[in-house]
Each structure stands twice: as C-alpha cells, then as structure tokens.
View (cartoon, rainbow, N blue to C red):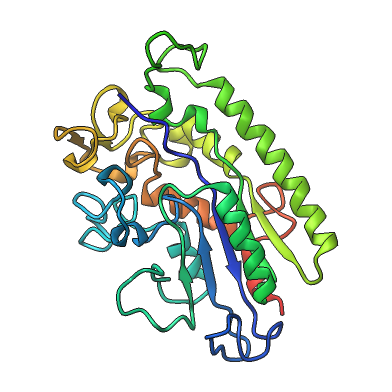
Length: 301
C-alpha cells in the first residue's frame, strides 16, 4: 500500500557579502561579490543528509538505482541524477552544494544543503527567518505541486472503513490538490507582505504547481513519454515505493530510460524534469517565476 509521505517544502537562500561584509553566517568567510547558496527543504532537495540520521529506508535514497547515471553511485538524492539545487548551483558558477551532515565538512564558503527528506513547513519557515537574521536577503521559493495528482497519491489505498478521498484509485485526489492551491495563494501573499516588512528582503517564487501539472497532463509536449507512470517502483503506474527493493518490499521494476518519465519514483521527479524546472526558475519569465527570476537575484547586489 502506498503511503502519504510526499509533500514538498523547498527554499533556496542566496547570501550576498555586500549585505553582511565578510560573512553570511558567523563562521563564514565570503569574498566580495560571492553569493553562497543555502538549501532548505525535504526530499525534493535532500542531497544526502538522510544518509547520516536514523531514518527508515523508506526515507532514504542511498542505494541503487538512485544516483545511477550522473554520479555513478547513490548519493542520497531521491532521483537517478541531479536535483534542482544542483542545476541552480551550476547556473550560478558554484560547485555542487554538499549536505550539511556530510562527515568532515567544515568549508561552507559556497553554501550548504540542510534539506532532509520528511521535513515540514514549520521547520523550513523557522530556518528561513533565522537565515534572514544572519544576513540572508535573497530567497527562492517553490510553490507546492499538484500533490493530489502525483503518482504515489493516485494509487493510495484508503484505510478500511475510512473515506479520505472521494475519487477512486488512478484519479487525482482533489482534496489534496485544493489544499495545495490554498497554500500556494497564502504563501504568495505572505511573501509579498514580507518584502514590504523586512528591509532588503528579496525573493523569487517559482510556480511549481502549474509547471508540474502541465507535464503530468501533456508529457509529450515537454519531451516525455510518461506522465503518470514512473520509472522505478511496482504496482499500478510503478508508483508503489519499492524502488531499489528497500522500501515497501523487495520486488520492483526499473525503466530503461528515465529521461522519458516525469517522475523517477512515486514522488520524485527525474533529472530531466528537475533540469526543466531549474531553467524556468533561473531564467523564466514573470508568468512562472516572480517577481524576478533566480538569475536576476544572483546578478543583483
């Protein structure tokens, strides 16, 4: 049976040395004009922090076939290759941003990744405000996606005697999708209010909801063959979380070409999907990333 554990809360923070001369965090040393990247979020952005904490295997991705292509080994990223922060770092001429819990890590000059699979909205909001207090002035946010239409939710089986969703398995769960839309409206308004309230606060807000919906509904338009069906897993749409055989059982199927799919497993996009979203975040127009895109953020003092 599928479980309800995919919910994306993701934040990127760009710290400019011109705001806090010489440092962005207390133990930092940042050269003039250099903007390190700090990453907060859940499994959509986790670069391996869950490798080093006591979490069940269903909340980890440090085994094959995760990481099989670009890295050649499982890094802890919840896909077969790179995630959105990896591409944003590339576009901004930064190296890959390491996970905060990586053993021996003591150089944060280019930033660090705090994202952890399973983290929640309250945790990320608190961390974001703390970073602002420490000198962070440029923030990037993703809206919630159409979570009721993600493959793992399409096949979710309701507990016996309970009716959580009105729609049958295989169709979008409208209740969850409506909740995501309400959340996205509220967070957009809250960010605008913070821009007015907090001195120097600037942000980019990526419409993850619409971008993902378009690819799920019209995969071939964006170069994919499959929108609902995922690359790695089992059961209907391969969306049951058994990818790698260390989730809910040991038997699973793996596609031949992950780039043909929007999703790699039941709740996480493929590298190709991540790359498409990253390009929209980096240089997209104001219909998809507003009030400015990420490139404009990095290019401004």
